[in-house]
Length: 505
Figure (cartoon, rainbow, N blue to C red):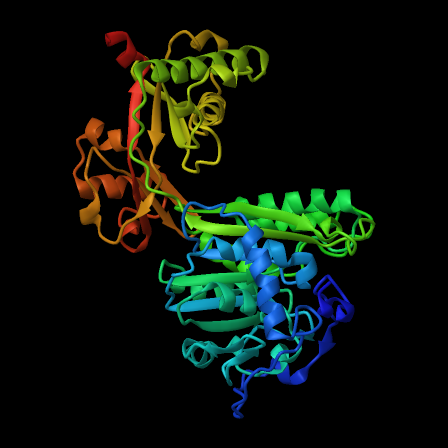
């Protein structure tokens, strides 16, 4: 067995916390020094040949789960014998020939308590596989932001960044540099500030590596439950959902659960960036825990490990639904509304009879009219459910949850007309000249306020572009007629069909 195993003294990745007054300072360390390995020989082999052999085995057995290169990967940082295979699966989603302008490696401090963040800008990182150059951007961040310190103390014994570097060195064929950042403390406000600083860099030119393990110390079955809850919270792409899930998971009194995620501040920082962009999605890659490791895994006390990728949602053309598929969706919407209004029940759907096109995840709106007047319109932009399921959910919401109208009455069911708009993913635009009236719907967001108009609104009202934007900004987002001028604007397309259309054919 690998020689380094005898020196592993802990598999969780947690060491200890201590107070460090110099870590609270924002002064830069004036002494240039390379960061030497702190956990080589314990968390992973210190011998170069042995380390390469181990990494080759992990990558050879890792799946290629994602169809596109991720913008970020969430990967574990424990001893390689326990979490190395999961980490390799995360890194394997990146093309070996990829070239990155910057690679951000972000971890949460396990050894030193301090406020803000610490970016190692005093030298390079050394591993058994050689030198990893620190990006000059690191010094720029330290100089620009007073909450990002340049002191090195938080990095001296911290493993969460170090253990990720051999994976990058082994896997990437092209030269790369890193921006190594350790987050201190436990303040969501700190995460928000760091996210604001790093948000401009989340794009196809760069890579974010977020270092964290999941549940710590419960028994095997409880670990799987906790990890599932936290993974779904990440996939929600919502900071609030993530924090609520963490608090709820840790408050459910799972025996021996000390934390649901040790690097939660690093993950929260990423979510503070990504939740602002509806065109991003988190996808699961691999999940295991330390109890899955033969000979060394103790299922009575485990740590969970997840590899999760962040990708851009692939551009989708408007759905080429057949007339039969359109009719099926309209039938589902009407059947759902009738059953829910009459009996407060959601009808079951036999998925086996549905075509593949109806099972593709997609956002959609359901619009109800009565005697030609709007009676309810609710939709979802997030393609988190199969199309048929989205239609079922939005039909109930349009009938009962539109705050502009009273819930639909049983006597009205026969009088309403149903229209469905199947949406393409949203695209943020830089200029309103990109908007084509009648083709594009718009989604405007400013702070916590947002509003949308479907593409057909411009056609029905005969508004010009300024009126389309102004009314959406004023009447839907409630940020004033000119509020769109300094707001985020997204466009999307919609495949629209209704019951009246079907009757004509």
